[in-house]
Length: 212
Image 1 (tube, rainbow, N blue to C red):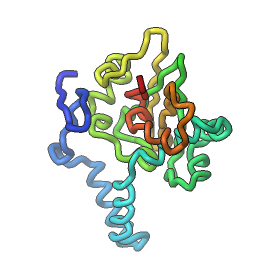
Image 2: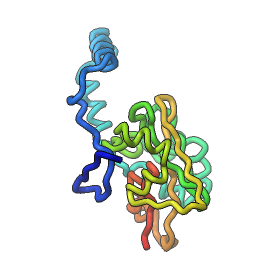
Image 3: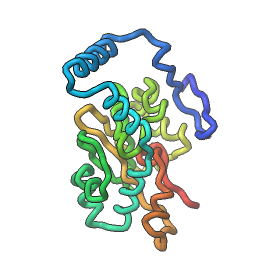
């Protein structure tokens, strides 16, 4: 990865993602603005409605997804339902997961999973917050498909040779989240404490939870 930099809250290198304003205005941007203006003119919603919706999305954090992971670690029946239908499982916990279907992929001792969106930045925002800049970068989107182990290593995550690495490509019609393995030594922890161990990046699959 030729161009890297660090943020204060992330100790590992990752692809640089330039500001959107650095590039030219694309046809899709123009189309999005035109459709938005048309919908407002036709009174399907107001500009204030749109602002409030964006504020809600922007305020999302990984906390809701972490709660679901912790519940799945403690309740095998809930885990089965979550692996079957994340959106329905979220509704059980009074969590708004949005309208786009989300699939949970479970990490095991034999398989490590990681998610990407090779076309843009499709991502389960309602459950794990806004995607980080590196997730949207072209370097991550192209390289994690071709050389996932190398990319994971740059995040400080080394997957043993005997463990299969699978990459799941999110789309506009289907988003993914990772159900990480429960770390050892947490048998006496309650749901809230377990949720506190779950991070955004382990639900993307670029890190694992290691309490050693």
